[in-house]
Image 1: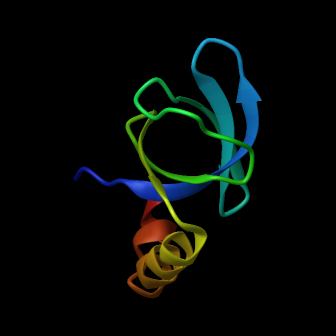
Image 2: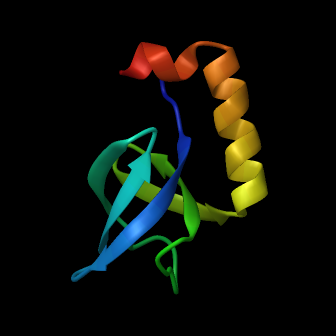
Length: 76
């Protein structure tokens, strides 16, 4: 199953990389596909790559729906 999830950027790193957080999990991702990201931005993450920016409200709605459906627990 392929799944893309919203994550929040917590730190911008060198070489098109960033640290992101979602549900208390921190991971390093590639940000080469999305320009001008900043700490606090939300992006859609798929297989280690930020695919697009998403606003915070939409990210929170998506995460809530995924949590209600048990999707996030299945990923842990």
